Amino acid sequence: MKKILAISLFCLTALTAGAQTMYDAINYADNNYYGTARSAALGNAMTAVGGDLGSVGINPAGAAVAGYSQFTITPGLSISSTNSSYAPTVGGSFTGTTPDSQNRFIMPNFGFMMNVDTRRDYGLKNWTFGMTLNTTNVFNERMSAGGVNNNSTMLGEMAYFASGIPGIDLVSGDNYDPYYDSDYAWPDILAFQSGMIANSFGSEDQYIGASEFQYDDGSILSPAAPVNQSYFRQRTGSKADAVINLAFNWNDKFYFGGNIGIVSLNYTENTNKLESPVDKSKFGLVIDDVETTWLSARQRYTLEAEGTGIYAKFGAIWLPVEGLRLGAAIKTPTVQTISQRWMWDGLCNFDGIKSNVWETPVAEYSYKLVSPFNFNLGAAYTLGNRALLSVDWERTDFRSMRFRDEDAAFGVDSYSEDNQYIRNNAGVTNNIRVGAEFKPSEAFALRAGYSYKNYAEKAANVKDLTHTGSIGFGYSSPGSFFLDAAVRYTKCPDTWFYPYDDYQVSETGGLISPPEIGIASRLMDVVLTLGWRF
Picture (cartoon, rainbow, N blue to C red):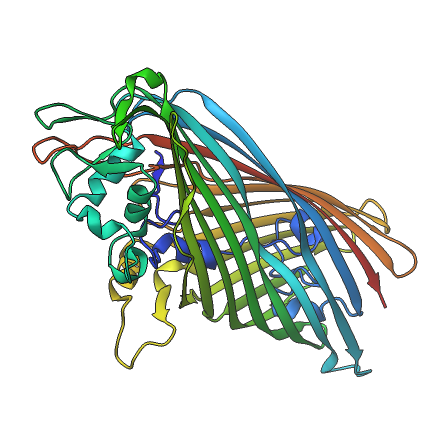
């Protein structure tokens, strides 16, 4: 079965200024570990393995396993590809696919770890102090889709949602700006000011889109004739944890440690919705007593988000018998302060009439997001220095996420309904990771990994999984230098969404279905770690 995501901001376009949704919270809180090339090649099944700077963010105890100091830097490339399909109505037939792609340079890991040998034969044998910057998510998507629609029109939907607003209230005047001096939705104001919608005949508060036709009896044909529609979305950004780590080795049998993590988030999204006539001669109209035809319309939405947060994480690794390692880690909720800026702009073109791009002001809003607590368990078995097999389970309960006002008065919770929706509709994510390593010689290692994760939203009888496979190799010189490389391929869950809502053209008419867009997303990451032991 398919997952339907409404076009609030995971697919991610907020329709009203200042709105935060469950999909925002999931988008900003979810982790997709990167780290070093070794940890990526092993599927990040590192809870019980340790010894690697990429593992420090997964289990803080792992820093004490290595027994030496090290410095690593990991550049990489993230390659995103999408295949998007378009159906003119919800549940209708999809008309082919449109491929798109986007490449981004990334820096998944950078850090150092200092090992201090206590020179004891028993008890605390060594302890480590380290600082790392590990990427925990990369936002990398570019998609486009479109087709011909004879059933509905974006401008008709705009006209419907503006109904009831006096036209005079949507126009700036002396000491009046509808964006600041009214409670009307900014897209409605922009649609009227740009000419995408206009007052219908004989009405001051009812509207008709430039792509629609009104008969003499007042009824509306929506659209007036088939229209070309296209939708474009681009997402960029990343989330990273700057970690301060302290870890201890007790008798080469028990390792324990803790992290203070500082989260840094940046996210940008741009969406474009475009509409134009298949045959412009079908869209004649009169503007200010001038006969013209409608040519095209575009609405663009831009969102920028930045966030910082802090959390603590504690972990341990135990070696009960030779070759077997057991690991566990627990992470506290992360309190992030998110600052968002967003705006719309629009353009509507008519034959023979000069058109201008109209813009809304830039809106700004800050709030707090409490990301969920999570824990991970792991087991690994080593066969001397030749082979390793590791399995991890990580569990995150997204039902515990919640929004908070940044400066709310005591006892005031303006997010109570949003938080209740999260509790009712978010889900529990289980991430299973498996990794294997084989060393044909002392200097070389071959690695492979696999992981899958279910989506963080509850839905009856729907099992959406993210599947990730990885391969890699490592080289360790006789001196201090070592090198690791990995390639990781991720199949994301297929998603479907509506670029605009359903609408009516009259009070007695039924709902008109919007188009539906489906996206199949894939992501490939290529990373290379350069390291030095000392």
